[in-house]
Length: 391
Length: 170
Image 1 (cartoon, rainbow over the protein chains, first blue to last red):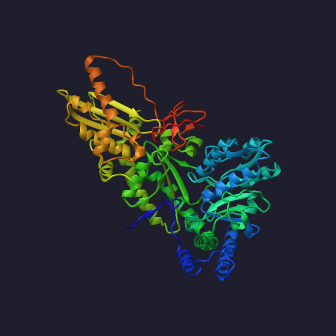
Image 2 (cartoon, rainbow over the protein chains, first blue to last red):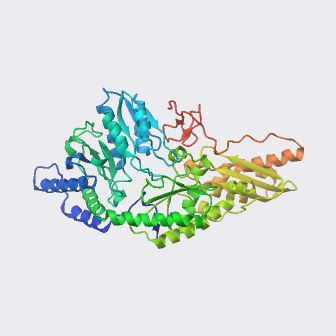
Image 3 (cartoon, chains in turn orange, brown):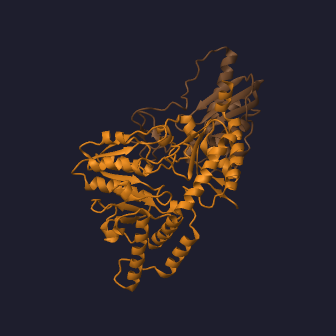
């Protein structure tokens, strides 16, 4: 089966070097890093080494600023709830944006049940936050700002550096959800000026089930998991060492190949955007034309629904993603697409493709050819298309 | 996630299209997830001689429409009135739970089309059925089901998606 994966954001394969590093660890390094004997020492050494490598990926000042977690979602939960609890005596207001990932949204909703208040700033038609809005939203009792680095539905990258200047001046902590950015685009926590940054391993070809949270030295954050003293007392529970070793191997490759991967993604994205007008009509390209992930293309195709498109393409062994309500278990229209001004129907017809290192221009051509037929077939069934044609 | 029968009807939908000068037309739309179906009927001797559909929606919605037209074609109006959404779902060998209340509106559209036909015949002019268009959505503070997180209509505590009653919603 020759499946063309254009949904790398959902799942990346493990690169060969990552597999090898993990298999080696499975065979030789099963010790517990917390043990006081040679088996433990060997594991602790591997853990330290991995932490150092991963710290370089985001340019943390010291490796200790990296806490390994089970996922990007856990990192986000840890950052938001950990800061909220640690700072509860200073205030209970948190500022965020309208287009955050559910990990942020639902963590904040949970905090709202515990009498925290959340202020959410809007985005423009490209999905960008205006730093002035963040400045205006910060109150005396604001303890944390959380704005994502890049958006997983439309790819827009936020002006994190500018926002960090504001939070620094107002002495408020700043967390950014960079799950879809770290290892994909260059990320430097010191240059960005953030206090906390969430990331995960799979977006840069590491295993799932491993994430990381950067916590700037001296930042008070309560643990999410209580127990042992692992991860410098910040996250209890025996480390997923094999996964962490895989993540570090992937981080090394991401640093080594960053430039060539970026050039490759850019070429494919430009090709799709250039060829789309020759393929289908009446669609919107979502996200910022410049400040955007190089490996993501999000389009809203009028008169059709996204899950149908996914199924049609799947029939031809092409994997893409949609943000339609029908595909989401929750049956809700995407808050991101509604926030950038798409109406309910157009939000339904949204398709997201994300490239990987193995994709080629040939793959793009194959995708476009199948997409053209799928869109026409679905439009021929659609009453909305018929009405638009009659009008 | 879909049965073979659903995928078959999705891939090869039966009776797609419009009947010009139809004897009855029924339209339904679900504002929660945005599916829309239109059913066209041609009636002869109180029997469904021809039936066609147009649907905007997910794989389930398209398969439901297609299966409904197969079930209804050739039936007397009295028989057709007895076709339920459940019958359609059963004929499709089941639908995912979250689609049962969302995309499974085919029988509703059929019954509206029959009603429309009977109204026309008896000369009754009914006001345009009030249907929430999909671009309308509730503004302001939105309520969510605390169990499955589906959006709840204002004032509702019963969640159609997961069929639970929420005593407290936010």
